[in-house]
Length: 148
Image 1 (tube, helix red, strand yellow):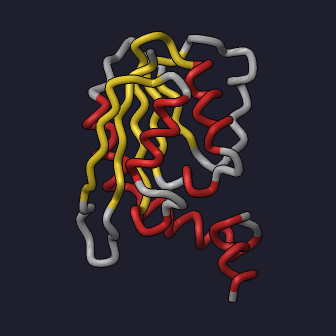
Image 2: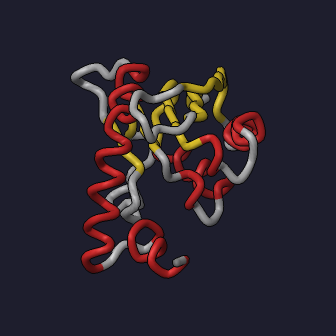
């Protein structure tokens, strides 16, 4: 069972990976719309969406991102401290980080996550929970921060 879940969601591949991707896209849609609304993205802003790919293109992209959106993936990061430091590096001063994750799958509380984000140099942190619409939706822990 664990291998099937890994093939569908953890390290998607084959038919299970395609099915897992479709399930995640459908399941994350409302949360992604909500996070985008909270971000209040302006037409001239540059947005980085954190997804399951390795993020090519951000290696030499210092202080060039205005808004970072991350939905249901922080729990998969191998090193959150390094991840938040990297986001801080690529963001412009005053840039906004908006993060949402299934509350029950977070490896730490949303308050501990906020402490990690703050340690990376972000300020004006806010956390809350949000209940996405839908029968199978689970409570989402959400966080907003500003790059100091």
